[in-house]
Length: 208
Picture 1 (cartoon, one colour):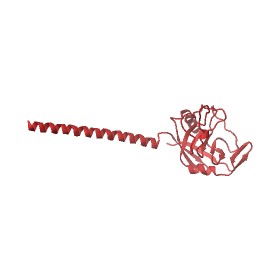
Picture 2 (cartoon, one colour):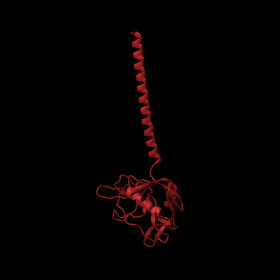
Picture 3 (cartoon, one colour):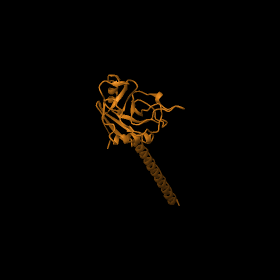
Picture 4 (cartoon, rainbow, N blue to C red):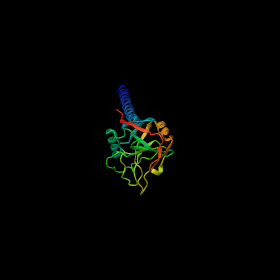
């Protein structure tokens, strides 16, 4: 009987060890999965866009999940080559730089129909984010966008007040944005805050 008892104890111990190993493997697998998800989030599965300007390259991450209509619209303008040789026509230090719709002679390029405002998507107008420019009509945005030079909470949506829809952020090249923000500006016709020397958007392309 004694040997049988010892054998049973050894079997129980072996089962316990096996259970511990299986639990450890399961926990390790869970940890790996969480780490992978975290890494994927950090690396971003969102589209990455390179904006080549006369001041340098600005790299953008698009928030396709939070702003599907706006990012789709932006990508359509990119794919059509619309932004090539447009300018940053409005530069206000400590506030925003705006572009994506004017040519060097300050003429508006023909655009597609305006899109619905997605400013209630939970994204905020923080420094380095991109939002759609629009008129007083919330659903009037077409091609023009601006890059926030600071946290502009006054541009966020609030109860009873539509905001400006954030759809992307600068992930590299913020020094280029700041360089554009520092150029000399003046008035041209009916437009104020226009760079004295044109700041061109030479090309915008989706990163392969």
